[in-house]
Length: 485
Image 1: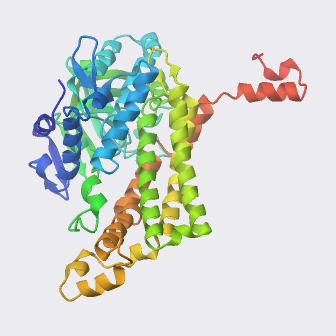
Image 2: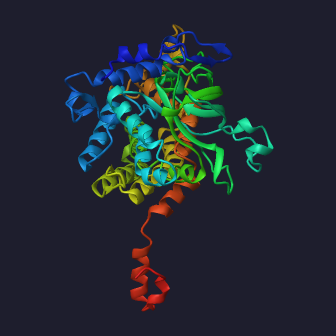
């Protein structure tokens, strides 16, 4: 069933155990730390029911049921373009960037379909679970996140030589399912429906079987599951001074699995390290696309803030300023080019799904993520030092201080003090706030660390074509190609 915002809010009021700042949260949707993002996600659900967005947000299933584009496994190139339009429409409507809405995570579940042959070669008992969950998420409109990173502990030691719970593992089998213990980090878990939980590193050595090699779907209200959340970046701050943080602080959670029962029908792979390692290598083949698209929208915000600031003071006429603005624009257009090329050159996967061209989308992810820190700093230069010295909104409203603020912050008839204050406050929140730093770190690591981004490109780039060109140009013998003519 296609959910409404009201349906979504009611569905996460399931008695889940959520903690923040040491206190148990009784009402997640209305708690100050969670409500802004719950409202954003509810808004996204409501968009699908509005005439303005219905064609962009929804699609008919084979049986005619109306479902969300975000959860539809892509079978054609047009399906991938539809997902791009979905992300674009959402980011435009919510007037900002939200990284965890589920569309960027469900692709990791689709990737399991591409691994069916490998999984079936080991055991076929879990394949029906994968197929059922892909269809269930599509038809039930479920907000799916991804439990991925463990606390890990001392990485120089295997988990068995320290507290074994540092990495999530199975502790018991029952007729009903497996009992798991440990912890995972996940953004937005406290207000999502379910999480695809899987191992983050190959922590089983050369073993063929391991209790740490497991992947499953877990509802966020499961008995024994505890959500221990970080503090809100807003705390007691004013939304006038931190407008982006106030709306888009996506709360991160330490998910503690305190002997949680995972029914057998929720298990995707279990104990077989070969299967777990294979699945890890292909998790982002679909999810990288919406992730990179979000950074493109973040780039637009950086450019807009920088351009407005240059225009208001007349600096947009200076060649040096234009060079910096052009650098921002070129970075943004590079992201867009990789996205479009990855769709236009899309590849059919082993399961018959259409995935973005792997080398192209991974190269786009590298371009977007490695450029983001430098581009944020470039935007900081263009906006100028006033973002770190401008008084807060109270000074612009106070009876005794407002006249002075109006005098010194009004530039001309186009840029009066109120709009200038709003621009500087937004730019500060976008670039300099603790939320800005948090989001930068998140973007660098959300889909694995930078070295893994590069390894994904190494594993998907066609090195044979350049080698063949050099073989011909240098007149090398056939034997240098090994078994590849």
